[in-house]
Image 1 (cartoon, rainbow over the protein chains, first blue to last red):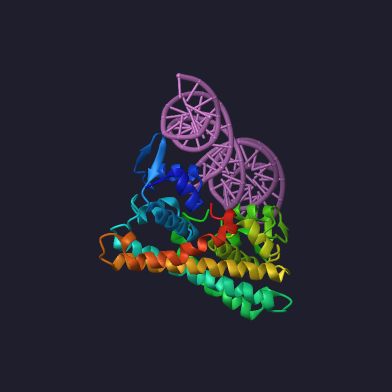
Image 2: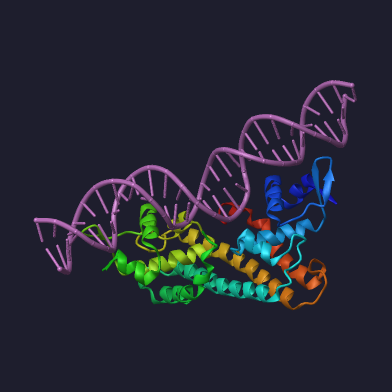
Length: 140
Length: 140
DNA sequence: CCTTGACCTCAAGCCAGCTTCAAGTTGCAG
DNA sequence: CTGCAACTTGAAGCTGGCTTGAGGTCAAGG
C-alpha cells in the first residue's frame, strides 16, 4: 500500500491531479492514514494507462469508459475494439505526418505544397479526415 | 480564389475558426471582396495540415512554428526532424495502447492488470513516458 | 434606393483539465 | 504536550482552443 506522497514520487503525477482523478472516478483510494490517501500498488499501472490514453487523445471521460476505477478494462468489448480502431486511424495519420515532416526536412524543393511527394503524404491523412468527423469531442 | 463561405463549405472548418486561425497567424487571407475574406486555394491544404497537426497532439503555436502562414514548412529543418521524432514516439505509444485494447477485448482473463500480455504491451509505452517529460505542454 | 442577409469586429463566454489558494486537520519529532 | 510540516477540502482561477453575441457594414436583389 502506498500513501499519496509515495505515489507522487513514483509516478510523477502531482497530488492535485490524483485528487482530481479520484473525484472524477478514474481512480480509487483504498483508505486513509490520518488524512492521507492510501492507494493500492496497482495505481501506478493505472496512472500509466491514463497517461497513455491522454497521449492517445482520449478525454478523461472516454478513459473512464474504457477502464473502471480499479483499472480493469471495460466489459464492453465492442467499445474497446472501437477505440482500437480509432487509434489505428490516428496512427495512420500521424505516420503520414511524420513522413511528411521528415521529407520536408530533407527535400530542397522551393515550395512544399507543390512538392508531389509531400502532398501525397499529407493527403493520405487528410483523406481520412472526413470519415473521422465523429471524433468531434476530443482535441479541443 | 475562394471566399470564406466557399472555404467553410469545402473544408468543413467554421468561419469563426478561420478568423481565429488568421488572428493567430496560422493562415493568411489574401484580400477582401467587400467585407468577405478571400483565400488562395492552397488554404484547403493548409487547413488539412493544421487539422493533422492538431490530431497529432501539437498545439496551434507548435503548428505555427512548423509551417509559416503561407503553409510552407519551416526552414528550420532540425525543428521539423525533432517533431518527426516526437511523432515516432507518440506512434509507438499509441500502437502499444491499440494492441492492449484489442487484447483486452479478446482475452478472457479475470484481471487484466495481472495478465502478462496486457501488462507487457502497456509497459512498452509507459517505459517511454519518463523520457517524454519534455512534452509537458500539449494535451490539455 | 432601400432592404436583407451574410459577413465583419471586438469582447465576452465556455469547456476540459488542471493548479492554486485559504482555511482546517493530523501524525510525528522534540 | 506542543509545534509544525504535510496533508486535507472546496472554491476559485488559469490556459488553450474555440464559439457566441451585440452591434456595424456592405453588395446584390427587388
